[in-house]
Length: 601
Image 1: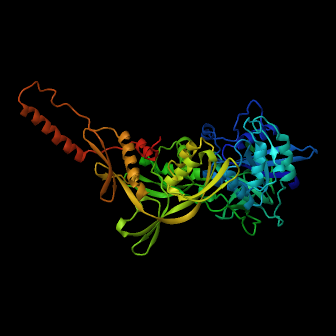
Image 2: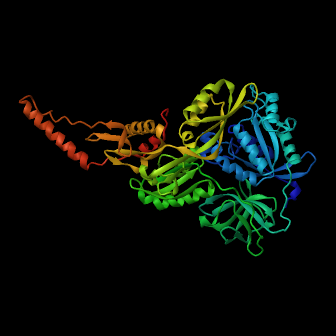
Image 3: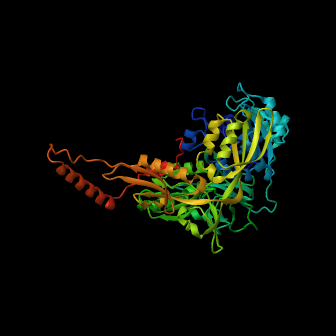
């Protein structure tokens, strides 16, 4: 058992691509908890998607030993967190289980928007913040300028910043010393009652739910009976341990520790991330604070391609929610696609990752409907409704007023690209509320804009216009009035409810035309013409036609009277008309995905 004074709990936070995972690799290598032959880059990124995309999606905890220069032995529990704004809930949960944070700043890129967001998040929880300037070996590194930004933008002491190169292992020893000297040791609950905060979970098909906890008081040992305070369910502990890349069994988990508990939990609904675990025979008086409730901003429906797979999909969604507590879903149904789930996501990247994980980790073949945001609608009878599903949209003549969510978007960009980025924000109905120069080269602009405008291609175009240098962060402000319409997509005169979308009236024509063009490329040609139409109510605003496969009925005519040919053509025409009335057009899965693509894709 390690004395509380020799435990340090901290997380690594930064803007995307500032080197968090690489720094984690160096700390793990320095601690020698893995053989060099088995080591690989991004070692904490356990999912294939993370390695392929080069991003961290899941926070990963690990415990490493460290012997300080004065000979004292420490146990360091740290969490590598994601940098993308869509996974900020992962960061907030990691922060709640720590006493300190390493705030990484890229020596070439400097302070960016997500750096500021993570700083404020850490300050909310009263964490000790250690600024770390990474990538000091780069030719473009400008350490004096970055120190000035740490002072001016972050309000931290620039002289306290630790200089490292995670890639080359420079300054890692100094960083270890800064961790043990500056980050405080954990404080245990003075009452001595057992309290453990659940900050994450994952599902093992052999052992059930493996619960990730941070101990705030008392201890938990195998054989004891624990209670989940929120659901009031009790389980007998089979196994406890710490994270050493793999699960490493220990005799007990004590105050200050970060580790896992296996208690044979098979009922997924018994576990809530943010719940408190205590002992059944000596329970704590009240639970720990938990986490702020997650607020999804993007909504989409998921349906199994084969309707018989619904129960299997439900089981997969429950298991995925264990590991991704920011995913919110409820039952939904569609005339075209059958039974499925209406899901809330933290952003479009979050939606993409959930789709990939369902397909890869759980072998689910699924269809996603076009994403939308949640609108507030006032009806003629005075009732107010929140609607995120186009299927729930009432008739236009029953609506008095509609409102859509707005965000406060903070963009930090080199001044060179300011003009094109301001034009992009204006195109997306953004209203500039602030602009100030952080220094001679960088400027921060703040816009209020509709969240729906950011959904599809805003982030990609922002990166394209700024050559990757602009950074973007946002927070949801509230609702403002808008002109809202429902776009229906009709295939051969039949509405396909899964393709319906809610849109700002000014964008409806472009959106409908784009969907019709994408569907034209995806739908196979039939023996009859297929009309693809976009409509608002009874008004058609866009149309594309998939031409018929033509059979040459005149091939057997070797000349002769024209009336003979005309008779054959009329007969074919009647046959196609009859076929069109009874023929069904099958929409492939790719057609639903094509609707989500931007014009640039």
